[in-house]
Every structure is written in structure tokens, then in C-alpha cells.
Length: 80
Image (tube, rainbow, N blue to C red):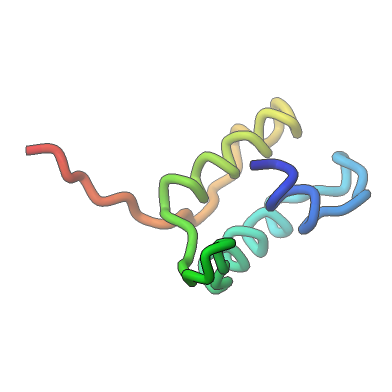
């Protein structure tokens, strides 16, 4: 997960330089990027996957990130 998305996007940026604005740009990037599987199928990332990536990133960044007000993709409730 981190190797596929976080590291390519943020590269060698120091953690202290990752701001709420940069993470919001990352979320927007995830929403508009189409990925191709090894089988050649194209898809966008699910909202759950994007939220999981942001959760991992916020844990890496630490306490200050808990108060960020990011706009994240909606997750549909499919439970009945």
C-alpha cells in the first residue's frame, strides 16, 4: 500500500513537510488517477482504499494530523 502510492507520491519529502493541504492534493490525485492491473484492466481506487491510505499517512505524521479536516471520498453503506 505505502510502496504503491505513498512513497511514489511523497518521495523523500520529510514527514514534517507533509501538510494538510498536501494530503488533500494527494486525495485528489488518488480520485482522478486510473490504475492498470497486470491483466490490463483499468480502474480507480475505491473510497475505502483511499481512506485507508490517508489513515496510514496520518498515523505516520502523528498527533497534529488528527485535527485535519480533509475531504475524503464517500463510502457507500452496502449493509442491509
